Amino acid sequence: MTVPLWAWIAVIGGLLVVLAFDLWIVDRGEPREFSMKQAGYWVAFYVALAVVFGIVLWIFAGPTPAGQFFAGYITEYSLSVDNLFVFYIIMTRFAVPKIHQHKVLLVGILMALVMRGIFIAVGAAALASFGWLFYVFGLFLIYTAVQLIRQHGHDDDDVPENAVLRWARRALPHTDDYVGSKVVVKVDGKRMVTPLLIVMIAIGTTDLLFALDSIPAIFGLTTDAFIVFSANAFALMGLRQLYFLLGGLLQRLVYLSYGLAFILGFIGVKLILEALHSSGVSWAPEVPIWLSLSVIGVTMVITTAASLIKARRDGRESKEITTSASGKQG
Image (cartoon, rainbow, N blue to C red; front, side, top):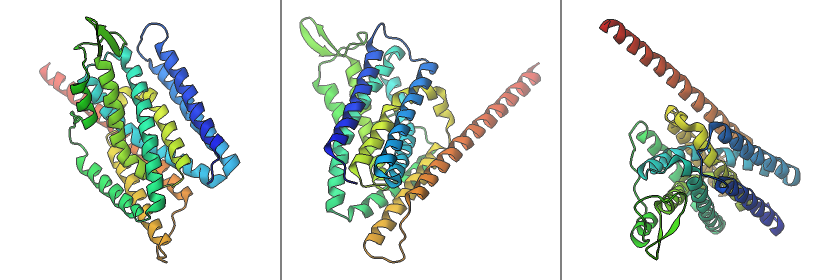
């Protein structure tokens, strides 16, 4: 799909306006916790924004690019839910006050969006020049799917610090405690950063590590850089509010890793088949975008439903055990 420059400018400019408005709302007045009601409204707003964008894309570019966008958006959003577990660990490790968590996530995700944009540009150029990278991406996604299944159920309460975060902690003079919502302060005439900036860097750079999985996944659905960037941007924009909306629900999505593993494995196989098809292998089929969209959507619905059913059953059994134990003691 040939995308004119004005379309890029319109999309990026529109996203920046929305994020600036979001940041203005966060910063105005006294810092406060994000309520479930607010989070629900914002999640609905960002999802509606993505749907409108997909419909506009359908009108001006046709059903195939629109289908690729929706498949990519759902995939990126689904994979982003897994990121929220790590964000929660980072917030806990740095003891970020709840009233400042929404600002940390917004700035950290904005950093991630810029870095993902660079990653997408490099990836699109590399795939256009080196077709064999499709095999590499496909095998990598299958490997990642296997690793997700193997790691299911393992406790992961620690997130290793990446090189950028280690450098920031070492090179930037920082205060020991938070200073309200400030990221830079003056102490005895010396400018210092607060732990709030360190956490923002941690969120942004950690998300980039997750992009090593998600970017190849969406390139398995489309190689159009405009669609890849748009799907990533819309998925990231709604991620902050989703963090507060899900809250304790994150711990109940026990089968999430299985669902994500299946999606990654499916896209990995799709990449390899389409690369073989492009190389002239007659038996290798092309997987239509409607099938990809259906597989991704159905997988996430089944995964979420199965997780909630199990959580409800486990909660009922735990309550029965507690009741039985209390009865015996009585």
